[in-house]
Structures are given as structure tokens and as C-alpha cells.
Picture 1 (cartoon, one colour):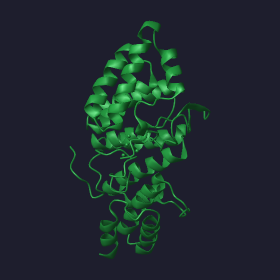
Picture 2 (tube, rainbow, N blue to C red; picture 1 turned 30 degrees about the horizontal axis):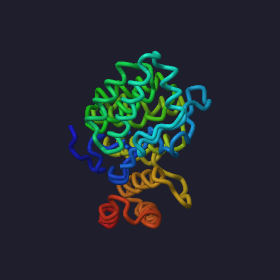
Picture 3 (cartoon, rainbow, N blue to C red; picture 1 turned 60 degrees about the horizontal axis):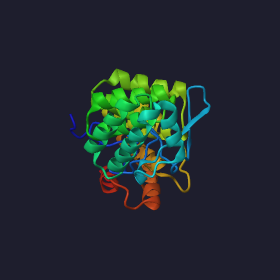
Picture 4 (cartoon, helix red, strand yellow; picture 1 turned 180 degrees about the vertical axis):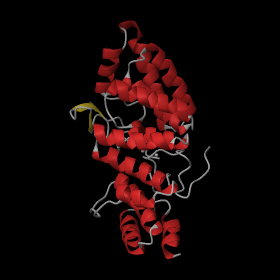
Length: 275
């Protein structure tokens, strides 16, 4: 497990939200932002999620700022934790968030596990624990916690990360099912972009390039793209190159370069297009 695929995606080792993901991405977080899932965060308390009924749910968590947890998380702890445990749980949650922001994922997972013992129904604790386990390459454990988070929070933010865990575990049928589930349940636009990154790469590596193109093709190149859009363009450019459509691949490479000249994997993509 962990060997590199042609996409440079190390079997799910980097979340779709990471720029170290070779231009693909959340497949949970470089940016350390959650949302998927899995989209990108809009800062503490920003970016409302969407539940299974399409209604807005909890705000999206940004783990780049460590223990500066917003008021809504304090309120969430109050709702989900017995009174005598709240102070300890909040302290543990803040410490776990700090460890995650510092890329100390083993420590973050340890602290989040302790906090979970005091408040097992808290969505934020499950979220930090799941993403920490994902960063550690503990795919089965991460998948279990991601699904618990989704059940508790009622949102699909991290379904792309679930897909990437399934991909790493070599469960292709379940990757297909997770994609269909996201389409059925719905989610943020960036969650779908991250899912297209993960699923498009999966399909390409599985020898299904036509399907990969239908998934990853951005249809049009927008101005002022965000990071999730750039990752989708990168995957689409790889697929187009594989299909022999060098014009489309070159168009997307040019657009990515204009938006972010330091985007990972551009030299490799350029070489592949020119080969």
C-alpha cells in the first residue's frame, strides 16, 4: 500500500485538499482544510454544509488555524457532552486541532481519541480524528471515523476522502458506490470538485479513461479558479493526454500555470503532453 500510481497519487496518502497531491488534491488535507471532502474551508465558521435533505448544516471547519476554535464548536461541545466533561473535552479538542495544524498527525489522532472517549457524538472530534488517521495512512480506521462523522454531522463534506480510502484499500466497487452516493446525497460545489479529482484519477488508473473524462472534464475554464478547480483541471489534463487530446490538455495546463505557476506536477504534465 502506498505505491505511486501514474497520477502521482500515493494510493490515497495525500488528501484531496493538499497541493502536495501532485495537482490532484481533499484524495482529507497541504491546506489542512476540511470540507472535501470534502471541499475547501472558507475560514472558521464559514461555508455552510449541506445535509441529505439539501438544507444547510454545520459550518465548515478550517484546521489551518489550530486551537482558535470558533463559538459554534464550543456550542457543539455543549450540546453533545455531559456537563462535567465539557471543559476536558474542549481542551482536548483544541490540543488536537493544534497538533493537526502543525502536521503532528499521530499526536492529533491520540488527542482526538481521548476527546472522543468523553464525547463520542461530537462531529468535530470525529472529523479531526478521521483526517488525522487518513494522514497517517490508516485507511480502515480513517474510513470508519469518516463514516461516523458523516452519520453524526449529516453532511457529505468528506465523502471524497472516503472514496480515497476505499481506493487505497483496493475496493473499486465501493469507490464506484461512493461516487453514486455523493451524486444522490448532494454537497458543496468544492466537495464535488474534490470527488471528481479522486474518482477521475481512480477511473484513469483503472483503465477507464472515457469515464474519467466524463467525470473530470471541467466543461469550461473559469477565471480566478480556486485550488479545488485547479486540481480538477490537472486531472482532466492528464485524462485528455491519455486520450490523445493534446489541445485540451495544453489548454488546461496553460490555465493552471497562469493561475499558479508553482502548482505541483506541471513539468511532468508538460512532458507527458509533449511526448
